[in-house]
Length: 264
Image (cartoon, rainbow, N blue to C red):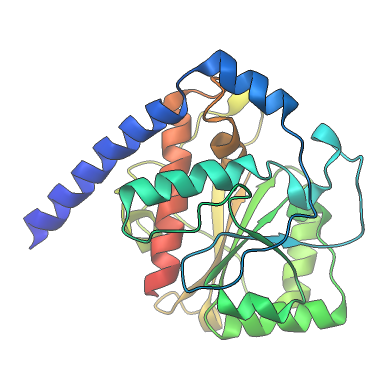
């Protein structure tokens, strides 16, 4: 049984490499499409049908015009990040996720629809704000088994992230995770968390989590990719901007996060 599982994961790793190369094919065409693709944040969400669907969290005020391509912080890398990622997830697992043009759904923090989905992703939590109602909905989501991914923040953005976490989960302790944690072995065997930063970004990439009741033997409630941006590596994986090896590692992390959230 152990040999069969190891073989399955080796096959999946080979498929991931092949899939990543396929995603990265026709680099010049992909780059041109990326630059010209219009991004709408008003696309209708897919109706819940039981399939795994990637959920991106919308928070705060309309900060359109902020950052790259005029998108608010919560929408950075949308929709290409989740669209590319779901293609990889479909290739290497049997989850058969939603594969629509948007790559998934966008839900506000206080939307009760959130309870239908096992995992939700937040970009740029350095700008995260929430109302009292949104805080309670998100807290109940976690208490009912939901898992959160925080991504794309670095440096001083930590302070707002930590402030919002303390409001969301009073008394919870953020702890740095090392490579021995089960989340890094839930599907792919991730051997190192030492990421080479893309285009000279500084800061050591690190991974933080919160355990239920602050007890390491219990469920991990969330993971935060600090000084890292795996969503951007998903987004750029078909443009040639990102080294294949870096995109592969980002995809492995994403797949592991989903498998962990579905099994814990």
